[in-house]
Image (cartoon, rainbow, N blue to C red; front, side, top):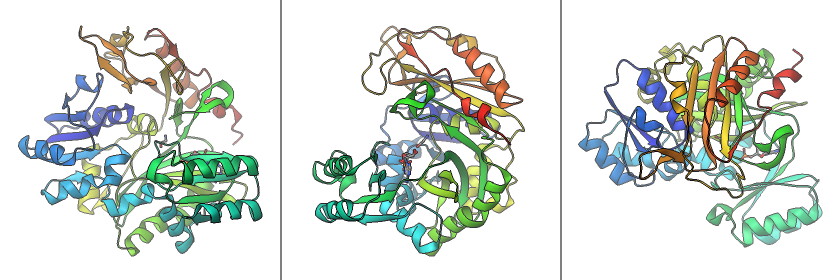
Length: 427
Ligand code: AMP
Ligand code: GLY
């Protein structure tokens, strides 16, 4: 088989790594890919939003299966564009990717089908939103731009002043562009956040192992929100009781709701859950693998990823016995110092060869490129996801931190407490 993966980050490097393990696969392409992915796949300089060019490439190169990693092309309809040309592609169509693409849609879906989530109101009129904030809001309160906003469209506001300023940014100043044409105002929830990825074939859902992210830039969960500074899988906080509750009240209900709306979902649903005192609630849905969740979940998956993706496309996921290793995995992100605000890039990365032939260790590239001398250099805020497995979370964490020392570049920055939550778990 020839396989095309669409995307360029650590998530796509993890997907390509899983695809490369499949005995069914002859050739892997990745568009646009990065310097690490280039070791396993032929990188193709076509951007993820250039659907026609990508589909033409897939036709010309006899691509049998395309796997889309990123949210923007999925929400924009890449799957529909491929299907129109008779190509097999893994991911939701545009009418199902709206589960991530519109927060107003997903909140209304949860309300209609009784799926637990934070209480909310939606607004397409700025003045009505202000009136609500002035008369009805309880603080802190959460404002969400309806559409995709590079993960930045959620504002947690401590008081009325902050909320009014936030509503202005989203709806009036259009800081997130048309994503702010509508806005959700929602109740602030407290609890521990966990991520659960799943495979879905339109009717059947199979849950992958859980994960837990660290979004803040600095140790002790301080500093600004980032795309994620590291994570681990499984999380002990996702207990059998939580799993049972979510299976009864969240997972299958979501899949059935989408089907009932005439929007059958095929692909990955990523459930962002808050474990509140009141039980688990859905914070958000994503329509794709998480980044860096894929980096800690996929290395633990026993199944051939090609078999699972094909079962999702064919509607035969009920026949797949999805299995994960009884181990743990930790990913520590090596970032450019100054991320997520401003940072230099273009520094040569040394020591990447230390990962060669080391079972259970992965160096997933997120922001890397080749310079004109052919050296691999830093090319983004998040540079590498240093990932290791272990028998336990503690062992995986020690392995991952040991491996962070194998790679060097100027302005290398990381958190030193990834996985600290493990020590707080009192099971
Ligand atoms: P989202 O893009 O919806 O995942 O939101 C980004 C982050 O904002 C989440 O990962 C949470 O940490 C936080 N968040 C979103 N909604 C809420 C909420 N209702 N209460 C508290 N925190 C929230
Ligand atoms: N790790 C969060 C995300 O992929 O959206």
